[in-house]
Image 1: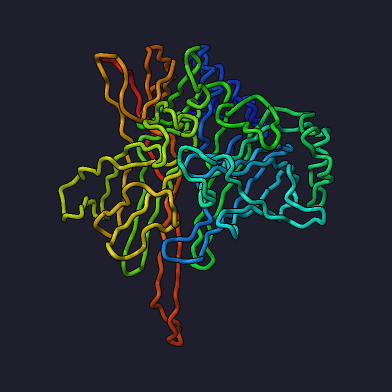
Image 2: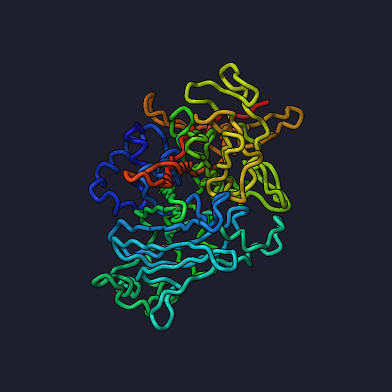
Length: 528
């Protein structure tokens, strides 16, 4: 359990009145306690740092994956992605919805949605006839631009490949539109008497007048974001009988600045986190905060969000049995990677520039069967497994596909083109795995860090809920180790030999999913 003082200060102090209307008294008391043990700098970090809300509500939502692709060997059986955005508060909100393709996070579509109090907006991403993807909605909430034509009919909106035409990946195809991830940023809330609030609020299930909700009127009567967004998505394949669900990762304390951005403007994004403080649960279970505020620090806000999402290891299960034609894919999405990587170079925590093979980071994948035996393709081995070095994660959303049984043809459940290198051949049918991001080496001759998966903060604090209040570390080069990661695992089972009561053969397919488990970032001082 996270300590009462540290947790309440982190989650309640920035404009969260809608989420916790009865907690003001407790929050003030908590702040006084924190001041006594932390001091001014520590208080600012605890109160304002962007962090993942384990309760699933926030100002920013990151959905790990969308796809309209066909699983391997399934022909025209394409997935659709059904999504929802929920406003759990009493305020009218304007949110930016942005889809990014999975190779290099190029934007493929963005638009604005105006959520009425307690509103839910839903849509479906579907394959297009030209090999790309489209999004459509039957929802009545106001959007800019509109999803409806002049006759009131919903119109599918195609994803666009213009943002990645001629880029370093050297792939201009519409196929890049078919998988990726998407983001929702709360931009502003509105005064109840504002033009937008009055006309976007639903009356008997329909907004009063979306015609009056314009980019011009959306700039008036605004207040800062207040959080309270939640969301999820379903990857459904009707022909194969599979459906996998995912929860959006929610960032709270992202910003206390309200700013409306027109559609087509690439803001807000992760560079807008304010102030540039990030908080995460460390590998040992303590609460750590990094401050990225020194004048010489680059990518300040992006590093704060990266720390909030940083993990040292990813843990999940897999199955691949021939008798059930089962298979497993892991989705590994790194939402802030595109801020640190380009065709001309890279910035830690990432370790290679972008080219046609991607921007690859090295990791180690260890696997065990269900009896903790780390069986390798060559036969049984002693525990623990020696691991498989030089495992490559090259894309913004990388799919790790487990090919457990040779010849079973069940690898690549999601049909992704952005798969890891290499595919995982465990040599056994089921078990669990642990993906570990490689850390650093220190060059004593130049007094610099080499390697991958590290992030240096200007100043840092650590709060141990058991031993006492936070402490501030002012020693230079306080470093966090890991990579920003969200995702989940999917499993599919196909039974083609079942029979009903009349003896007729029935094909039965099943799908399930598991959220990843993690260890948070490790940290320490880099010293020669």
